[in-house]
Image (spheres, rainbow, N blue to C red):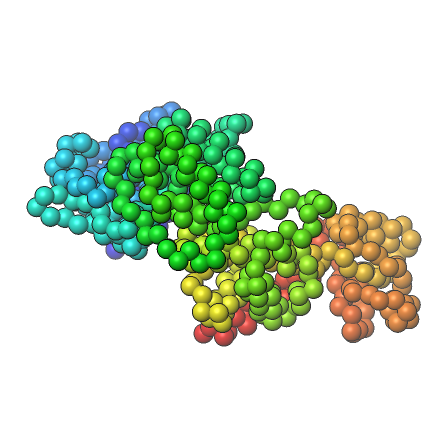
Length: 522
């Protein structure tokens, strides 16, 4: 019995099936984010798997790898088999044709199109189009949209805001954040910029850039990058849908609950600019739409001494209460009191009010660093996820998405690193003066904000600790048990020692918290 392919090998195979041409190993490796060696290793499994389908690989030096079959039908059948079954949204996002079809259906909604029109346009059989529509349908359903097929044709049904949300996630799927190159005049990264130009053209992009520049000037604070790109994309889509004359009316919340008049005025001004450009009146719901996005956007905190209390202007009693509670819950989970960390409190305070607005208006943002956060800060991410779940239960909030948890994780990571920051250390060393000086200077190089209160021998340690306040002892020799935590290191204080010290200060807390969490969950 042949081993099934792993999800990465599946992805590699799909990539080759979608490119009916030679693809270099370098390109495949970049796409999968692995080494070329891994691609070669995976290819051996894939080739064994393909033999059963009478498909083989054609390898050309310099050109790369291409799949070849006596009967081209085999390639199509295989692609249909492996595309939907792994349930990844990748089945849509890594297939250029499906992206185009989904974009077209979303842009044209509520107008209809037919399967035969689509198959003529994309030069493939109706069966393949039906399969594409199945994948598109499973992708739009969780976004609150349905695909309706009738005698007269196929179209997407749903509210205007859900249609726009789906277009945004499509475009963001295409935005390739790894694209090299640099565009100096733009705050968008090159990948996002090119994806947006591809969809909307340069003139509209320049217009929206100027619009947002003016908005930030009036707000007097800049938006954080993911929020900026989110608002940027949404305004482009709004203009695009208006221009096609397809847009449905947005549900305008008439009882505008306590609107922030200043920001509502800025949104009105933006809509007027768009009307001037489009030479067309926009429905009044569009002002409310842009307003929701502005108050749901996180901002970039620039540290100036001249506006200290900005966090209080940008918070309200609800966000203050939730911030205190989140810090409390996290502190209990990790057995470390972070309540007196003012930077953590203020950073979360600024983040949580727009987060609450995003939950309220069902606005999703993408966190481009999410995978890195999950890998690099795995334990803190887990604990933050648990803390936010408890917070949501306590205050009956909607569930907070992984992307959002990723942003909160970074605040807590910084707070934990600050816990290491200002320690009072006693160094206990048995050897001569030279070694103790070397040890002391190396400790300070690794942890510059620590203060080394003294360097003593084991004999004098106890008396020293009674006279001075010490957080931690770093020692090169074995000591008797003491209330103060001791970390043993080598006299040369190398990388392993640094790791040991960091582990002891942060990680022991984390491991303990995570193992208690997993014990509680099982």
